[in-house]
Image 1 (cartoon, rainbow, N blue to C red):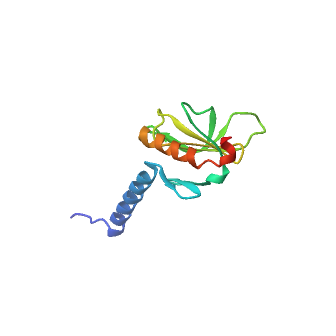
Image 2 (cartoon, rainbow, N blue to C red):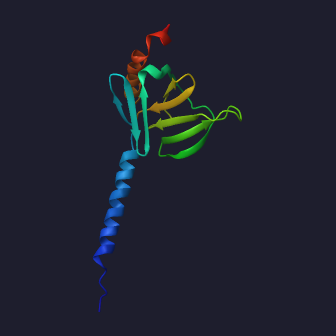
Image 3 (cartoon, rainbow, N blue to C red):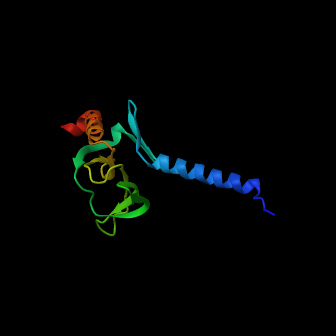
Length: 144
């Protein structure tokens, strides 16, 4: 005589798989949205909205500075999360990292005088286009 599994367990297994697939898909790339006055970056649980008026500088860098990860992950060439720089014991500023391709160059955004955000996209051409767009959106007084 075969023992039949309760339907609730089957439903729970299916729901768990769906939630895991959705979490993987949401973290698998950076979802950027450029509006007239701001850039919005969404990557899974990590969300950052940055007005262009707050930008101080935008540049392309090869490597990340030495940092301590407060939360987030690095896997399969991705790096997402909130970090803290190793400057001194007085520094407690958070650095947001949204990398879809760790080996590629990264866009370094400095905003509100000293806060940092690092960002890149899977394709280096898309990253370069985003960099040029962000440089055009810099407030005029920071360019001089």
